[in-house]
Length: 494
Image (cartoon, rainbow, N blue to C red; front, side, top):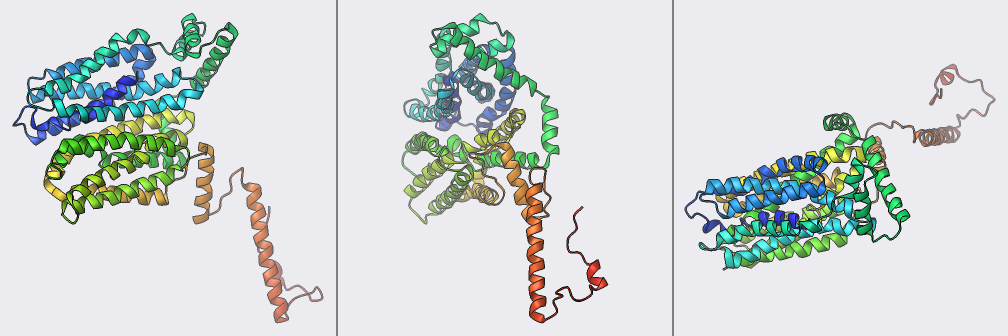
């Protein structure tokens, strides 16, 4: 299953190196379209992937996805012209979007709780390794005679997946959702968990069934859930924060590096492929570092470090291209840029969605975020060559502006989500808003609010009495109470 994610990464990076040798004489516009077509197919595949996973089963959907990669890979390898290449990139993008939704679901449902996190990270590692392998294969194959083999790796890998499909098990959760008495599901659970006794299998089946019932009870149409999110002020703020992070993840320019780093490094270092491969290797290492940091550092802290570090890297890149620094500094800055991306803006925009929303909202929020992400990916892939031609050494300037905005947004607006529940996040948002606007206690805070107001009132009365004593005007009870004073009541309680 993880080979599908490997192909997602491979096809993200495979167009980087062979631009000059694939149908020489093509225009920048048609090549940009071939690169960006990948991101047009992606959101359509993401929508279809979820539907096929429910109707055909996880295993059946994975086989359909593999066949799609095979068709797209063959068409890409034997393309007679650039227009066919654009179509093949669209098909592969469709398969990649399909995979990005399906593979995490499949691995999450098969994995035992103790391995769920490990297998979850396998999807990210498979993708970044795919990018690195595309960079490495470019050395022998990115030539006028062998570029078709470079593109054919997609079809070869998909064929290997089909040959290994006998080892691909169906998700027991999907089987039990269709038939709680499924013997096949029980057999698969026994295989996956290494269980020996029937009562152990039935206990595990019970966990699957309870989880499935909880999900069914919370099912609503996507439109209804989205309306509910947008009508609830706190949920709407969380939703907007997620969208901003998704836009920032793409408009920070990371895929401009993965799509076009070879052309970017021309004139910067002697062999641009070496620079591209170093970036791919650093990307893999940084992904591992990010996994170590996820459970020890706050999400907001990592976003601040990530956007701040990437911003400074963009400045150094531009200064290097303007010859304030040597060319090697540009290479170093690009790798620092990629490293800071992987520790924050890479994983956190996806991770934070599940931490901000309750289960009933997560699927819809994630779906919208995915569509926004793919659209922004398309925009970057299509426009960066033109931006690079127009701005030259200042081509990373727009990315630096986006990163400065993300840093400011994270610093002032983004809540910390690590170790909190969605309900706790909403309560924290209420408290922060109350400090800057008007205090409006909710049901859980009413008692504390009244106590606080009472304490403030008592302190004010004591200060007024002390002032009157010092001035000699204090009424110790021997004087008649003035009518105007009787009418002035500082606090009233119903």
